[in-house]
Image 1: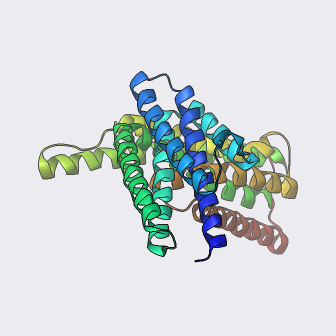
Image 2 (image 1 turned 180 degrees about the vertical axis):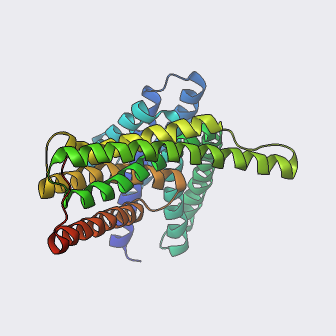
Amino acid sequence: MGGGGISEVEREFLEDELSDYMLYDSTARHESDRELKKLILKLRDTELRHAKFWASLLGISDISSIRVSAGLRLKVFLYVIVRKALGIAFVTKMLERNEKAGLEDYKNMVKGGGFSRSTLDKIERIVKEEEGHERILMQQTQKHEAVLNYTRSIVFGLNDGLVEILAVVAGLAMIATNAFTVAITGIIVGVSGTLSMAAGAYISSKSEKVVEESLDGMSMAKTRPSNEAYYTGIFYFIGALVATSPFILGSFSYLGTVEAVILVAIVLSAASALVAIISDTGIMKRILEMLVVSLGAAFATALIGFIVRTVFGVAISA
């Protein structure tokens, strides 16, 4: 690897370490738990030391002179918003995911070579420290496992409400003669789905506990079936309201369907990103997968409704 290539790699790792430093610094400033704040500050200081190492390789003596990109500032701002909206459990999971990705980059770089022996020794020490960060954050994540499980229930309930009710209203919008018919049907189906999803979540969680207790005499689950049922059901209905809202507000036919699709796509993208972070899967892959499934279902039912109305002359009025 040539010198130009090395400089590029050094700059990338400098930016990554600065990013981690800023994320920890911002998280610590907004954290009220003293023990957790102390831990995050310790991680922050280590990331700053890593950033200074990469800066020294680039001949930069004053790290404060480095211009921070707008994208990085936005990333830090979003972490603060997520912390306030979803709590420290979710932010800890995000930080763990971030450390895991950074550690993989370091390991790949070490394998690639191109640095002097003394520099590689320092990088390998950084790798060990990054591995320690990942373990620490994984332990913190495990402490908040119950909260993350409830977040899963919330997101899955929201996803199902968005996808299922969008399909219902998209198909019905093609054969209904007014917005009220679509709106009231969407709400009724949403209430029915809410009860069904809540009951299913309760039975599933309860059964899981029973199976675990029958196998080893104790349950490892840290959540309550009643709470999982509550979160799943409530957010299913919220998803249903999002999908139905254009028709509740008076939009109709093609316009109402397009508005519903746009709203669902926006909310579903955000929810899918949360699922991806919690489950350690690719964010873009998860978003695209959910959008294809949901919009595909909406298109299919809308097409069926269009055919029914056009070919058979069927229409539903209030």
